[in-house]
Length: 259
Image (cartoon, rainbow, N blue to C red; front, side):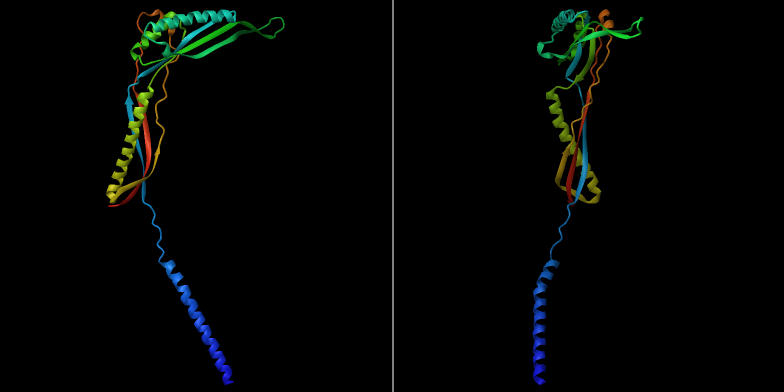
């Protein structure tokens, strides 16, 4: 009996030692998890900067041409070509070069007359001729010659003046775009600094920049000009250009920190 108690006591001692060693081996891992630092979140402010400018255009685009109708396609083409040659000669005399002239539209199509027969009551379509339309576009930096270009073209036979509008050349456009983008970003920075000042924060970096598309007003052409009245009048056609309003914006995400 005494021997059995000794055996039970020995087993209990072994179990106690085993449990103690297990506790010791787990403790370091538990302590390691407790001291693992939690990652801090970035502090940011998002601001949209804007910039705009008004600039005088340096290009004018004039679209005009000749529309002729004859009984046959050959006659319509011949008559149209004769008039267009006179028009080209007229506008070159006021300083327009071949490089400033391009064909924007050329069409030839049949013209039909629709009527109802008295005997049968049927609707009949009859070919009565062909119409040829030849529209050219003049794109030039000679803004002071706009009135002279239109008047000389109408006098030479132009019977369609579709549009006149002003725009910016590629060189002016690119330079203006770069200038406005820089101003938009500086505007965003200024806004951010003003917003952070009362909060005792400051800009410490830039996380992201998103640039918007360069915005220009769509040109507004002058349609249906009274070319008949211009041809009869001895006074030059008054055409005035207007400044082009352009704008852009930049969305900037700034990293911020306390002062």
